[in-house]
Length: 327
Image (cartoon, rainbow, N blue to C red; front, side, top):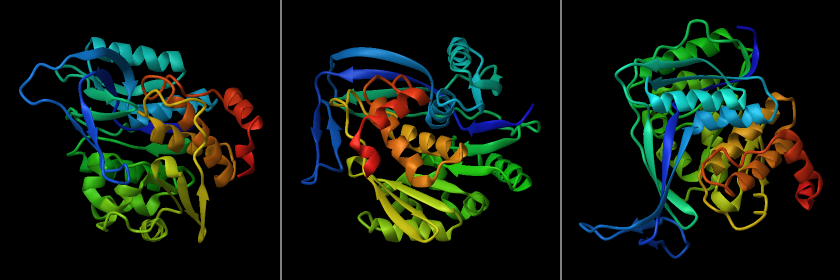
């Protein structure tokens, strides 16, 4: 396979958005650390169920990059069932090369339930344990983007690290998922050491480093940088994003919502992957991150993590008509 611009690696799933009617959200005084509450042992009505195919952190990144005009390939594992066929159709529609999305008979395709209440959501996840084998004919790429994979995939991560070490010119972006965070930087040390771009939210950064929640972002960024990543970006919801590059720490505010968010699934993925896509195009970090905040603001206007992703001309037109470009 000829060299591509952007290769995304990670699990893909089907998301079933269940819009709740009867629930309560309880948050602390800072409107953080929220929990969703429903009556236990009861029958609870819901408003709707919307099924979205071919999503997940890495899949969302692949679609974002493809819509921005990059030649994109995706490495993943799925079942061999009707859901898998719908996923492959989605990637074809988006122009994502799914040559290395491997189907496995007898193992279901990942299916997650998204409990959607107000603009927020809680996701019930189950990653199937596929026989993860990194493709020996994986394409050469300008950029490799790694995100969420199932637990028990340590040797698969070793193979990814070996691939990256054999291709030192490749820009490597890492957006760790739940199980990768649990593995920690010790087990994934080769990936951290090889990383050009690392992104996570503030709570995840503290968890990765074993530090207290509430630790200053600059301290978190410096400690993550010390593990190897050349660029560290830490998101903090509506407070925006903080970045650390070449000893310089700077803040990027979130782009104003064009209208109240419909639901917030995929906001972080949109920011991270859009930023990396523009870095792949050769744009400076702050300009790339600014564009990432725009895609993040627009993806929350629709159901799911992909429907609201912008094409490059749409995004640039929005940026050209806003004062946000001056921040």
